[in-house]
Length: 330
View 1 (cartoon, rainbow, N blue to C red):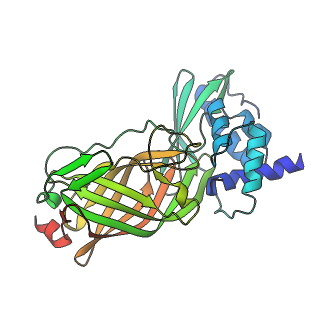
View 2: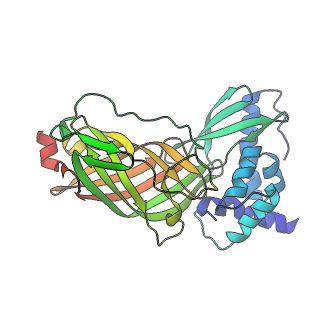
View 3: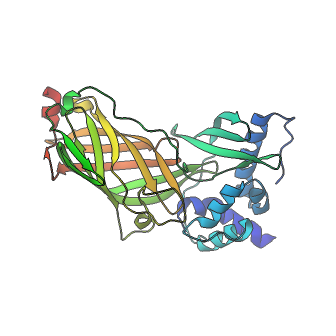
């Protein structure tokens, strides 16, 4: 039993950092039962009570735990123990307990919205199995996130940009820029709290048209850092057991103009932990005659937070991206 508790204590944080119980008596109130289940899972992880945690995971979450790191599921306790052994030497940031802001119930399915320290919201899915509310997933959105949409009309910052042509994964035309970041911090948000996941270099090609629409193509992360080499744009159906590959361009649009420009992108990333997708806001900051692009926020409600800075340079396959002065006066 001591081994189980030690293993579970490691899983509580290590599964968040890298890839690699009973039902509460709430008097028949579904929302109260769901809140109790979420809190029980969190405290059981912290206490190292792996048996209680497994008892509150739905079948889909059990498969998820067994598939992390591209493994094949066996049984919940054995899979969590194997993961704990792999992650025993991983150092992680102390997790902050989330606040449960809202619970929505629809039959035998439910959604809870948790809020972390910076105000980032995360959607947690639950299912009622054998009369008990259980977590349907621990990490990631699992697909199905809403799309930001590109909107209509013309934006003054990109009004001089020409049309953009998109064929599969290839994007050409419009105003083009290459965005390069040496270090972007990836933080995982879940019912267990917030934990550092990865620090990766990220590169992408941006194309904007005269209507303010934006496409981010050829998104790429470091191939010589782990787990950065296991993070890539979504391609195909979500599944933590599938190796990620380069997917279609992200879509979005430019908002504002001059020194108050920002991008809103529909980001979708496959990782060895799960799929994370949703709207992400990036701020464009003048840096001389060029732009710097900042992000410090969540990818929708998926449970992934990004923080870091890109430098924008002249891209290929299109006209020059508007300079800060050109954007202000266009």
